[in-house]
Each structure stands twice: as structure tokens, then as C-alpha cells.
Length: 94
Length: 114
Length: 253
Picture 1 (cartoon, each protein chain N blue to C red):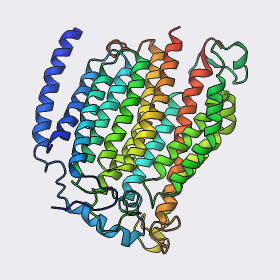
Picture 2: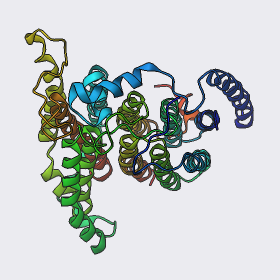
Picture 3: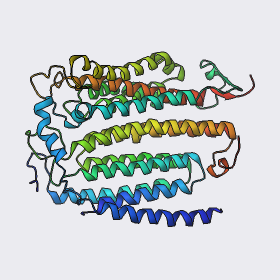
Picture 4: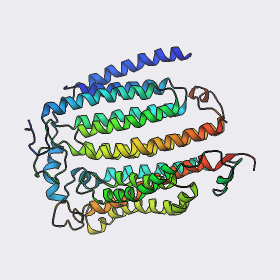
């Protein structure tokens, strides 16, 4: 099997395992929270937090490129698009 | 720890699917679809992980350091950005449905005609 | 079927799907035991062959460039589709963007939001261009940089009126930039064919230092075009939605 890498930035394997397990549990809880939130604007904000949690998970999986993508899209662009849609739909209900 | 990320992947998929099926509002349904898509990103990155390896960028580490798989990261990266645009297209359909039929409840929309 | 019945039936179905999915995933090698030879081969050869130190971008734009062309055209089609679907229907009228200020009943933008948005527009633009132009060195690339460029334009909207955003990014110009980005990527690939190489071969000179801005041949150029296209697509989508929310009203002609 591959031996562990030795760079100035490598952390012990146990630490990385603990971090990954914690973030995975938080991501699972975040997904449940997104589905179960009732009010629309609150759900968009919880989705934004879920996006940030996913970005931290991707960083713990050694993928900084995907982290950048998920941060910009999932925490900024998607909530903007969703909030604009909700504003449009709600305005017509007045 | 061997299979725990895959259990989380299955959990996220099932929770998202449950949200899609039992939803009463199109925008809530689309948000649950986003959650389902995110489970595939976690699966892709979980498949390519190598224990004890670094990210596949050799700008500041020596060239033959063990690194994780770069191919799945390339797939997940373009995936994330493109799915946002497709979600915007879905939302524009929801806006037009609301303009035409006045309601965004998928169970009422299923029974409308024309 | 009543909602409670729907809930139970779907729960049974989803439990069955989860059981099969878990059974299938248990056949994979465990987390962290990646066996596959392709990833290791790419890591071994990429720096020598393409002179790029960002292996993920090298895979994206060189080794698997054909997949990326396909994904980019999905983005292009989605942005075009949003523009088509959100057209003005018969029976709606569009108010001009200028008279919004007179009878609008929303509160004016607060000074704090205005100041922060003004302060950050320039730096966000610079960060977006930096990311777009450094795909071959760092964890950067056209996709992330393009989205951040679009966010800079949204900051322009936040710091002023909608009219200002329309003046900075008129629809015709944004569509032209998007088309130039998508077409540029395809054109770089097609330009390899008359030289007798396969479509999307990396044929430009590769530079001397791995990871410099001018190294790695077509990867840097493709990343620039992808950044243009992704940024323009997101500006178009958000501009369309803003127009729907702010300008188009139900009413008689």
C-alpha cells in the first residue's frame, strides 16, 4: 500500500480520520435539516450552511479545487438564484 | 471507518429522495434535488481517496509525493458548477408554472390539464 | 392517495433502494484503499508531459478535455434555456427600469451594504481573474474563477440600482462574451485537427518552468475561455431572474 506522504503540511492519520468522521456526521445532519425545514427562506439559509459544511468535507478529502467550486456555487450563487425565485413567486401571491 | 462515508452517501440520497416525494411546493422539491445531487459528489471523492496522501498539486511538494486520485476531482469540479445552471433552468420552469396555473403544489399541478 | 399513505409507501420504497445501494457499495474497496491504476499513471506522467503542476486542471482540460467541452455546452444550453423560458408572456407588461425609484415600496439600500459592496467589487474581480489565469499551477481554474467574476457583478447590483447593473452588462454584450468563451474552447480543439493531431491535443509550446503562468500549452488558454463563458452564463441567469422580479408585472397591455 502507499506509504504516508511526508511534507511540511501532513497531519497524523488519526487526526485526519477523526476530522473526516466528524464532518461526515455533520453533513448527514445538515442534509436532514435542509429537507425538514418548512419555511422557504429559512430553508435557503440552511442550504447555504450545508454548502459550507460540504466544502469543509471536500477539503478534508484533500480536494481544494472542489472546495472552491462548492463554496462559490453552493453558498453564494445557488442561494441568490433561489431567493430571487422565491421573491418572484411570493410577489405574485399578493 | 472503512465504509462509513458510503453509509453517509446512502443516507443523504434517501433523505433527499424522501423530501422530493413528499413535498408540497416546487421550490422545496428543487432544493431536495440539490441535496440528492450533493450525495454523488461525496461518493465520487470518497472513491478516489488514498489514506495518508496529499492533494494532487505539485506546486510546493516534491513531484512524486503520493496523492489522491485527480480524475474524480476533475469530474466533481465541473459537476458542481454545471448543476447550478441546470437548477436555475428548473427554477425558471417553476416560475412559468406559477404564472400559468397560479399554484406551486406538485400534487395539484399533476391534475391540471392545459 | 392521501399524504400519509404516500409517506408510508415512499418510505418502504426508499428503504428497499437503500438496502440495494448499500449492498452494491459494500463491494467497493474500503475508503482509502484506492487500487485503480489510472489515477497513479496520470499523477506519474502529468508534470512531465504537460508542465502543469495543477494535475486536476491538467486532467480537466487536457487528458479529459472532451468531457469538459460537453459539460461546458450543458452550461451554455442551460443559460440559453433560462433566457428562453423566462420570456415575457402575452398579457404582461414590462416597466422601464428607470421609474422604479418613484413608487417602489421597498426600503432603500442601507449605507452599510452600499459601502461594503463598493469596497469589495474591485478585489473580487481581481480574485476572479487570478483564479481563472492560474489553472495550471494552483487549485484554480476557469469554472471557479468564472463564478466569482459573476459574483462581482452581483455586488454592483447590491451597491446601486438595477439600472446600474444593466448598464454594466447589457444582454447583447454578455451573450456575445458567453458565445466567445464557448466557441473559443471548441475552436482551440478544432485548430489541432489541420495539424494532423487529434481534436483537443495540447499543441502549444509548453514553457520552461512547470507551473508558471505561461506554461502548459493550451491549458491556460482554455481555462481563460472557460472562465469567460461561465461568468457570462451566471450573469445572464441572474440578470434574467432580477428582471423577472423587479420589472415584469402582471397587467393588461
